[in-house]
Length: 231
Image (cartoon, rainbow, N blue to C red; front, side, top):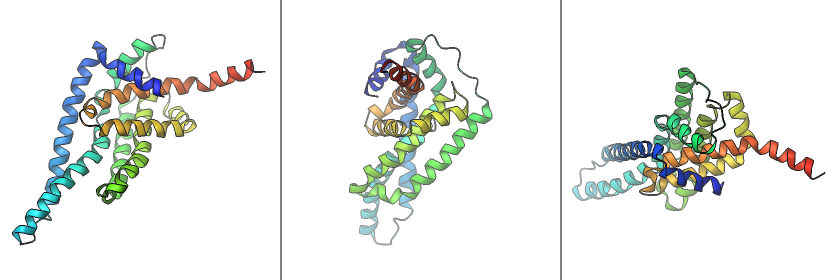
């Protein structure tokens, strides 16, 4: 998996990825601004106590809380936009590293929309449920990584895998590699939390998970060959 991270990072120098990197940066900045402004708006609604000094203190605390909440919600919301980058990113990675593969599977629009809405509903519901924990310094990062490692690993993997496999086969492959997929999701979550780097992290994450998917597809065959040769 470490090798796949470095392969994904190296892909950023590919001319085919430059437009996607720019699109990722612009999208990430817009999402961060909207998240921070939205969180601040919601928190400000509860900052009217009638006492100036207390209102001022609540607003200052609210601004800090808004930034924290925006930072922790950012990975989920930016992940909902990866469809903007996905096909071109898959093409760039597979042309460079997996050029012998046939054309990707044509995915019906209804399948894409249903998958995105399902992920959005589950991800937002679970993150809202644990939202108070994101404001507790000792708890926020472990809770965030445990929950979103699963969510991000699942979403990135399945959106990429269904380009090569049926939805049922994609889910089966993810379940067979669920620990690896969760760990890959944790890596993705950490990427999306690192300031500045998180602007290009969606593209790196897509490339990273493409390599993981192709690696995990051939693992059973490689293990079988190893067992035969060891007899």
